[in-house]
Amino acid sequence: MAYHDDLLEQAWHLARRELKRPKQASLRRAISTGYYALFHLLISETAKNWKRVEERPTLARMFEHTLMAKVCTKRRDDLRTFFNTRSIGDPAVAVEKHPLNISEVFVRMMGNRHTADYDSSVEWARSDVFEQLKYVQSAFASWDVIRETPLAQHFLVTLLLKERRP
Figure 1 (cartoon, rainbow, N blue to C red):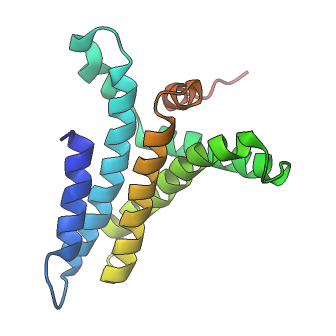
Figure 2: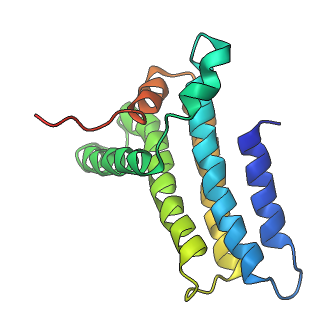
């Protein structure tokens, strides 16, 4: 199993850990681990495209959480606009819903991770954690659908792009 798959499995394990009264520590770590599962899925998929295998770990270290979130936020917003101008029968809608899902889940889970890791005033319910982990699973499933497409490859490379000032 790949590292990102292991992380997602571990997130579910943490979410289910205490049967009757889940500890906040377990639920918070489940949220955080779910975010990292998606983060590592995207960076490992990008690194796989690098021809020189020995350089892939170096490439993977180039990813920045905040930059990825900015790219995903812009992508999400652009795709929402796109969907507002298209009919449901448009073939592009069927394909573009997957990058939209991945982008939405990445942004959502990054926010959830910050809340889980840094805001002790928020108490997580197991059902809320399950719901968030299902979103991560849906992002994994969306990735599986588009993995080999040029659309997906373009999405991955944009995760490394920094804004340029004119």
